[in-house]
Amino acid sequence: MRFLVLGRRGQVGAALAAALGPLGEVTATAREQIDLTDPDSIRAGVRRARPDVIVNAAAYTAVDLAEEQRELAFAVNATAPGILAEEARKAGALLVHYSTDYVFDGRKQGAYTETDAATPLSVYGESKLAGERAVASSGGRHYIFRTSWVYSPVGRNFLLTILRRAREGQELRVVDDQRGAPTSAAAIAAATVQVFATKNAPFGLYHMSAAGETTWHGFAVAILVEAGLAVPVQAIRTEEYAARAVRPKNSLLDGAKLRGTFGIGLPDWREGLRATMAELR
Image (tube, rainbow, N blue to C red):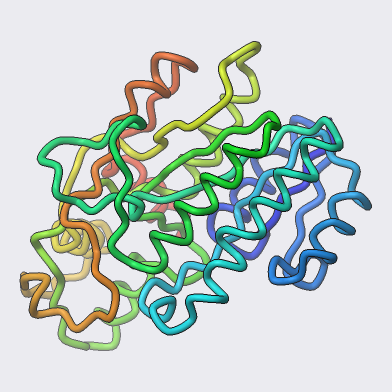
């Protein structure tokens, strides 16, 4: 089986490139090989790779900057997935695409299911939802996996930022009224591999995030405990954190459909954190 993985320098892309190796031939690309802002580059890259499976782990993820760079965010997060889906359909390939909890407004009390209405609050969330719809309407075989609060030992993410700031002696003020499930890139990659081991499973949209829940403040405290750093973390409200983009207060995703279809349940977020910290050490 030939896999084309887009976004090899990203958190999920790097984890996938390694995890998919035992399943077949993996071609992992970055912008130099396939530029997601250039439709011709996307089409040429896919046709050159001749994949059986396209795994799109690339995305524009600068949530606040997207408020100013709407055109760029939509080019990468909406237009590009649509082109990938079109190319996958023409080639008879499967497309795997990753989306986000930010497609929801966070007003629901419980965890969001795949059938809940998506009403994003930010340009980033709007662009990711548009990408989902482009893939879903393509007519090709596809999986869309929504996940949340992604982190890993590489790249730019909340975990690495908290560790860096703590070690530099910077003040830590973290929002305590947004809740969700921090999900490691390794857990996402492992779950994706399990999906490929399931025969004749229905295609479509699934939620793929860690079990359990916490707040950004709770996540920060847990990171520092795992790192053995006795650094105070001040809990603040969302209104006290200067951000251009509005975040959902509730980012919890219900994983029942993923469990019921594939028998896959991602581990508790604390387990994922411990594994990631062990890797960092």
